[in-house]
Length: 213
Image (cartoon, rainbow, N blue to C red; front, side, top):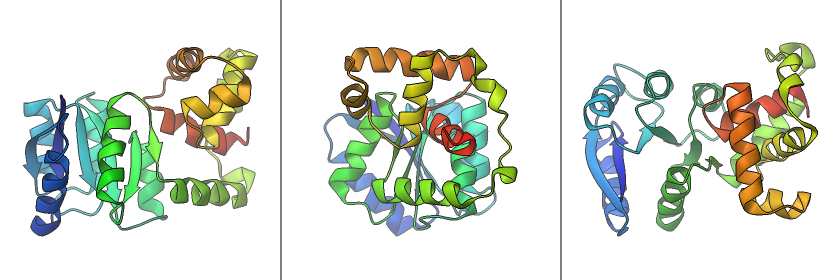
């Protein structure tokens, strides 16, 4: 059973999200938070598997709340917002969010996203992935804060997998492109995250884009 905490300041939206999630037999909504501070406090108390986090909330915004939840390793965070590309998105991803979806996501896709993140696979809505890549591609190299030397510890294969993550590819897609078993891809992803001291594959994707690999 996937234990989920829903953090959303609009009560009607929050109720709708809870209703959708409770329709899935393998998802249990263990709590509801109306602001960022409450989300962090409830995550500490309930230790859910995943926090479905709104970005714009009172008292403490979703980016700051995500940063605290991830830093304390309380749960994975799946960000849900109406904003498809702005500083909030980049802030949430750099804070360690394991996934990013828009609020207009279909109910079925929301459930699948929660299940995907719970399996340990990061997720960004396809439309957002394309725009993220375009945004990074348009940025001057000087704007990146990533140090290329962090890649020195990676093997050639791990670099190839990291490049695929930067394109937003799933494990299955990476396995097909690099002609390897999906289980092997998971092993490479796990190892490169450990070497790069990253919390999620989404952070790895952001790093890959920043370094242009």
